[in-house]
Structure formats: structure tokens, C-alpha cells
Image 1: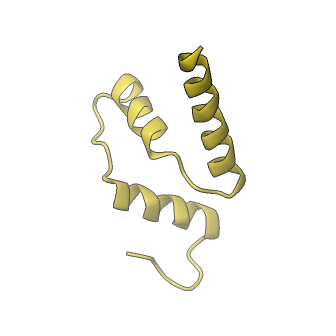
Image 2: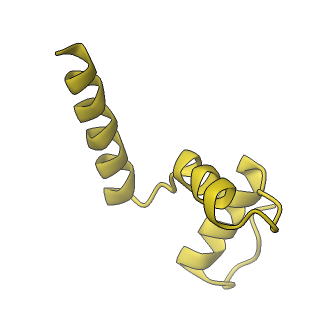
Length: 64
């Protein structure tokens, strides 16, 4: 029962982050480690800046 609640909490948290546009770093790391073994995994700061750039474009400047 507790594992079902924990899983539901994870899904809810991920859904809320996606609704407000917050990137999911853990999902990115898992994807990179299972799919793109030949490419380096970005740090959280690099990932966050890349996602911000992808979302808002190169208008005012970079966050990093």
C-alpha cells in the first residue's frame, strides 16, 4: 500500500513540475544513462540553463 502511495506521489510531483515548466533532472539522467551512453550527462546547473534557453529562447541573455 505504501509503495502505491509513494508511486502516486512521484507521478503527482512530476505532473506538477511539468505544469509549471520545471524540468525533471532525474528523468533526464535516467534517459541519458540508458539511451545515450556515448554522451556525457549535464550537471543540474547545465541542464537547468539548457532547459531555460530552450523554453524562453535567446532573448535577453543566458542565465549562466
